[in-house]
Image 1 (cartoon, helix red, strand yellow):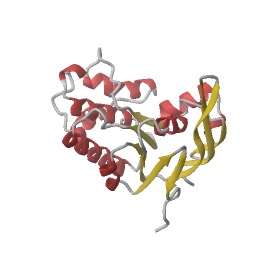
Image 2 (cartoon, rainbow, N blue to C red; image 1 turned 90 degrees about the vertical axis):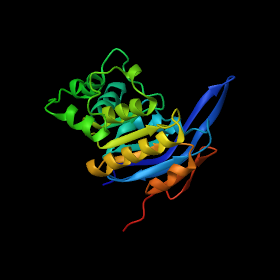
Image 3 (cartoon, one colour; image 1 turned 30 degrees about the vertical axis):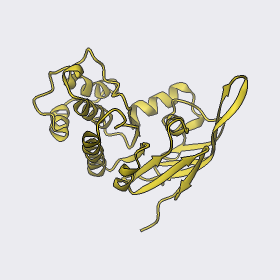
Length: 227
């Protein structure tokens, strides 16, 4: 069974009293342990597609199945619960809670899901290369360090699916490559599925498969090749 299955997905928005199609009949799959890179121009609908897969927005038509469940058909509460428990989302601008320390930001998903802390925060800090920074606040970190914390927060409750929306868009080239390599390393170790949304074509070589979103349609291999 695929981790994520998307079939005939359509999404439009109203602009100037007209329906403007953004996603036009998208089909794709994502398997556990697979890294799929989604490329496309800015404003071309990549974030909309990711938000549909995360259950933040709902499609006009089409089907999204997450671990075999009809995800898009659930109500707001049902989608929110799945997103909280089984999906990790990483944003371009970190979205860390500024009044919480690094350790407290990492604890947050565990607390929301009523999972034991154990030594998971310390282990995640070590995996992120942030040992000794747990009591700092986000504003005391560099951009690359903040994005590492955001990755850790998305991973710490072991969700099957990770969705990363332009996670390096606010970083310099060197930090961007380091962050993406760290993210993919953690995905491999944990067996997560990752959809990495970016406009940086150089990062595509780090994934297993590359898709390009143009005029609301996907180009590339919508399904992985069987080994």
